[in-house]
Image (cartoon, rainbow, N blue to C red; front, side):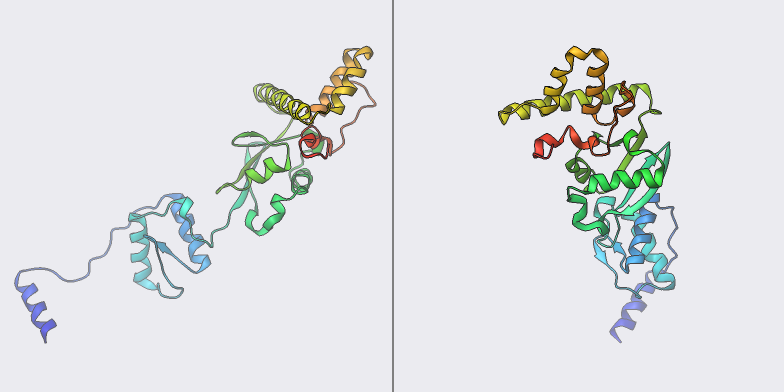
Length: 250
């Protein structure tokens, strides 16, 4: 009875208590994707609150979506069920590859970088000895580099064929490799040892510029096509070789 009396009093003031339809607004693309992933996972995140599966039906679902559009969920706070798919850009085309989280601890293992490079060659047609793989921070060379790149919220790699890449990017990469080479050389000195590759380079100085260029190309790892002598070849392991000295495997 008290509720009925309250309703009569509200109506006496001319207040319309009937439910009104919500205006539909377009959600940002990433917001729509977040909600799609959340629905597939069985939860919908709305203003920090979860909704149990099967609760949202008919008009209630439309109402919840409208609420979510007014209070969008940021990509960094996506539901736990959302996947982190590695995106790979090759020849200007973007590909969704695999769910990083499904790989588990393998992405942090020493074998991961080599396995990923082999699969890049297999699926994207970029020969292993001609690969240059980058993330947003620059060239990736060691297993630690690849592991770090895949820890991002939205991991993305850029794959290039060194024979087809632009001149500006090539020059910047050469400068980066020279800086890496200097850091590795300094690490060798910290351990009271001499870089074996540098020793070989010194021994080849009498053979002329061609031999020096060949040795430097192998040191650089991804520049195998620059090797001058016909007998020189770049094995897959050489892509990681120059950085290997820091871990004791080079």
